[in-house]
Image 1 (tube, rainbow, N blue to C red):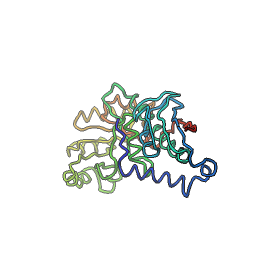
Image 2: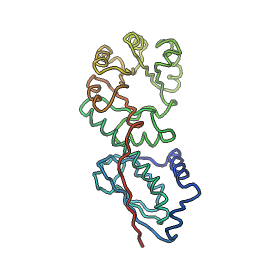
Image 3: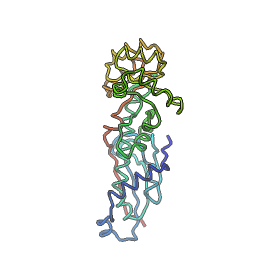
Image 4: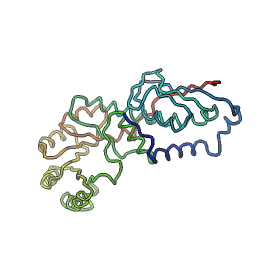
Length: 278
């Protein structure tokens, strides 16, 4: 899996994190550690996890050797990466490096759990826009490292007509007809959230290519998917967790979107062991 660290948003996110943590300087390290000392560090998994974001270390330290890459599994006790830098620099950057790796690997680990839960079905797990403000690109890269398919990066690269759009415009037909010219100009397909059989029928009559079934039980979703009968791709959202995702996948849905992958992933346990070197 390619974890591209060269996008401007990623460089800016790392810079913001250092500014937030270091400010005018690391007073403790500058007071305690002689300027000329150098150090080696090992990032070690303290639980089984899916690695994500290890490539960011190349933006933080002088010499980085990656033993794992984003998308790889690491067992408890395995070394993910080794780094070498000035001792002060390593101590100053330790927490930011760990924050990124623990958070992003947590997203990847949860993403992999969802992907594994639907293995053997034809259903793909999608991420959502429910991300940490300012970290969306990183968190979506982490979700992809876990095997999830990235959905919309933002409001600018897809047309998804949801219930509030329907309420504001007056219904499925009005919203779809209003969106058609933009969809054609931008070469995008239209997706519509549908809540009732009548809305499904109206969307299908307008040849909407993708429907979103939100907050239905697996039984309700299966019934509507049988009715749709392949006339549109179907995404399921709402009410999905690790204990229910398999049942939703077995309804015949093409996609299941899971906001929890980014908004509720727990950080995983990774530590950095540092020692002075010549």
